[in-house]
Length: 70
Image 1: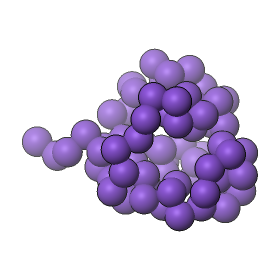
Image 2: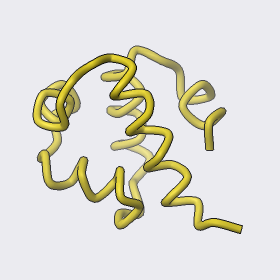
Image 3: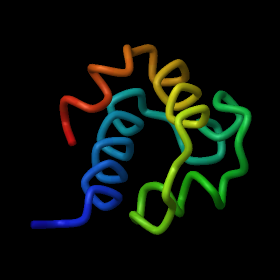
């Protein structure tokens, strides 16, 4: 089975693309660094719960909706 970090990152990227925003703009909306967002989307980061909540808010979805794609 594929690592959860890769599945989570792929879900974040897909949802960000649905919003039609760049990684840089998305990072600004989250209050996170662009390179950190890139690391999440590539499955390189083990994201904290606090940052997962920031991602969900920036995507305008609930935490459960964010994890539905994982």
